[in-house]
Length: 396
Image (tube, rainbow, N blue to C red; front, side):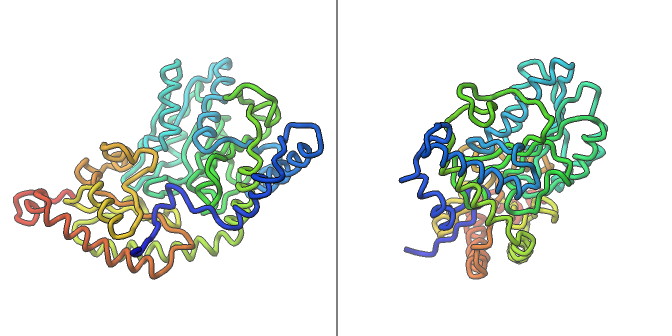
């Protein structure tokens, strides 16, 4: 086999050996139902509660503010639908979000609109940021919820979460953040950062797929999204995924240890990669410099994104042109359109997402391969030919 480099960690990460080892007993011998009253079940319950405490400590939350879900999408849906279902009886029927959220938030907000709620979609600037002032100006006496992602899944931009949360706290509005991309990569403290609700998913920081968390600050009322049993303190029915919960807890514990040091090291590799890829003519970095440590998103003029990904794959590089959740779509990324890129440029984007496991040699290989791939694709591009011949103006 040839060289293989996995550079799509924003889509999902490799399950770490430590996490798998922590999970294994609960996939084999310790298989008890955590809601059962006999000892095997009670043992599973103690394990779940210990994991809940670990997650709470990693987030700066209280143990009884942590609710386990099937992942980030469920947590986003539950936060938005559950809170607004309660607040509508108080005349709070307005939601504020941005136009470049993950589809788990955008599609949920569109669902809410179909059911009589009003949604304001704040525009982000050309670098992918929204300001606390925009949020404050959009709040009305009917606003019940502000939901703004912590860090964008495609271009990695980190929002001024503490300041937005402060505005919401001052205005008496609940603030939710989709932190699926941020947890495990940035130091987060929900209490210090004025966060009322937060979504996360374990598979973004070397944990298992199919398990996530919704943090709900004490005092916030939220209706159930899933009905059935009395699990999660009567708030979320479904037999507890004990192995997944254990894996999530171990993964977040590992990810948040020495997080600032790891972020610095990954950021240095990220900047080195960005610097070298931007040496290719007619390219641009998408998103500002205040971004996730491992996120690189670059557009190459005169190149089609799907062909770019396929040729990278042929050279052993796994990358993305946007969100993994929309990778089957031929439409340009809504995130790149939101920051003002024309369709032609948005189609030619490459997202690389690295972790502490990405070596300097891996990055050097990417730097070696990508320019050659771009050169070959441009040699077959009628658009690039027109740009080179001066028949068409560059859009960058």
